[in-house]
Image 1 (cartoon, rainbow, N blue to C red):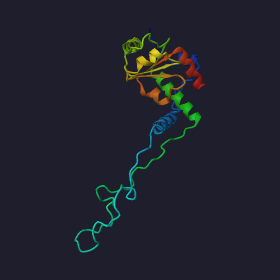
Image 2: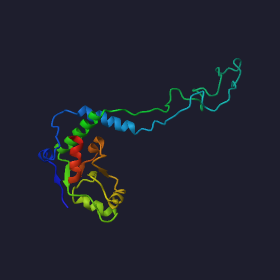
Image 3: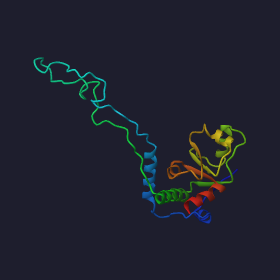
Image 4: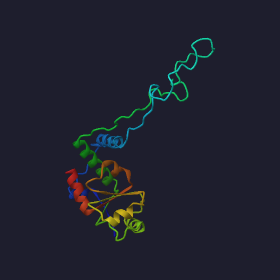
Length: 202
């Protein structure tokens, strides 16, 4: 099996309007920041002096001991006391408009096409769910190990064969995003997926 580099001319013939200027750079930044922020769970939580488990008893009398005044053991300056201005559960998600997401996706795809990092092949499939078979298949297409594979759909055997290959990500043309397009050194796209990508950026 072989793969051919997707040129700008070939991309335009496939109805992908390649962005060859600086347009869309800010959109890519906004979308990648939003994608990463939306993955944050926001569950970090610290206890204030009112929430820690401690007695309300005054540790020692106010005067006469020679020690500093102390009113409660849950004070933030005490070991085991509360935390001042610590993190609380919050929502980190950011919203990006549909048009910005679309522009960012096209810009990310265009930049990879201009760099010659997008390869087109007939199909990506293995007969048995064996990692070795998938690795050999990908090695016949590119020398790079960190590869993003985009197809219209995958067989169950192909999915299972890819589970153990950490530098390789299998995704569909309908689900791949701008961040993934930028994260891998080479992108392998099947001809069916290429038409789906053209529909997404139309």
